Amino acid sequence: MNPNQSIMTSTDERIVDAAKKFGRTIGESDVYKNFEAAHQSLRGDQEAQQLLQHYQQSQQQLQMMQSWGGANPDDIQRLEDIRKQMMENKTLKDFFGAQDELVAQLKELNQFMTDTLGFDFADMTKPAGGCC
Image 1 (cartoon, one colour):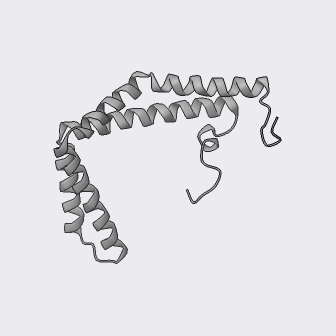
Image 2 (cartoon, helix red, strand yellow):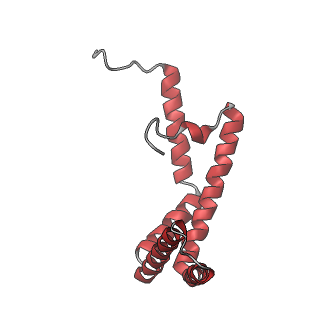
Image 3 (tube, one colour):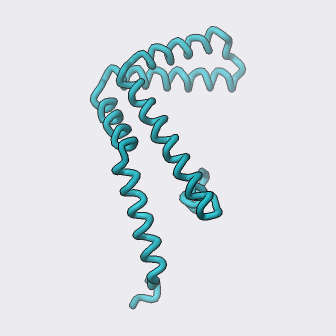
């Protein structure tokens, strides 16, 4: 055996198996399937993609203006108008709704796991290093 390889104990194997089952269960949930379907719809809808891109670019511009002290209430209102227009698009509305449902379910699962395990489950899944 290579000295750099570790020997997995039966406990380690059970933990890995449980994590895989947990991931599969999430991936097979109706909430996740609804999100995936909404995401696919978004990928196939050029108009929705353009609206989203326009909103994101406008949001970035406003943030830059605010950081330089040059934003005014009209700029903020323009971004809000673009957001309202974007949310009138059925594809985007469905996508953001499905995304919100998935995030809520994942937060609920995290809270359950945190309460059960006694430590912040989601915090343990973050990368070990880096800036984020």
